[in-house]
Image (cartoon, rainbow, N blue to C red; front, side, top):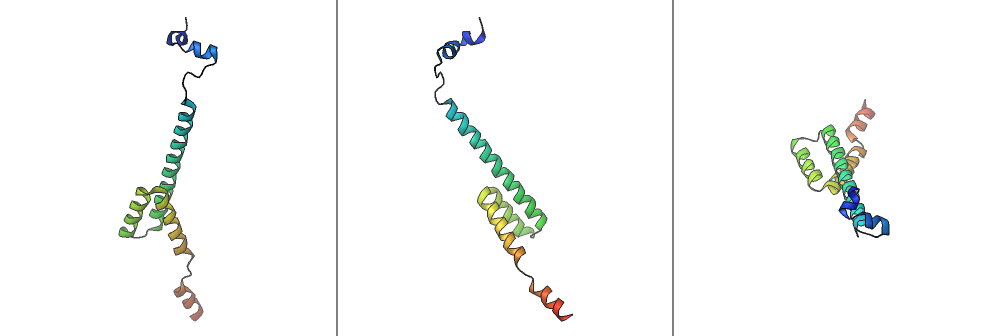
Length: 101
């Protein structure tokens, strides 16, 4: 006799019964949860690397680390938007100096 027959699962397979109702939903929700956690972790790691490479200063960098890791998606999006805004601003001092000299 096989292990499935011993466990009583052969009747489910033979009769085409749903012996574990809701298991498919549980499996899908578990995979979606793992995917979401994985994406949040990857985005937070990306933002952390960006913060380190931007060298924003000790206090500002520490505050951004806290924001990125306590509210992963919102903190990372806020960091990338603020960094984009900061780097897209023209540096008026450089433009003035190049026009003078």
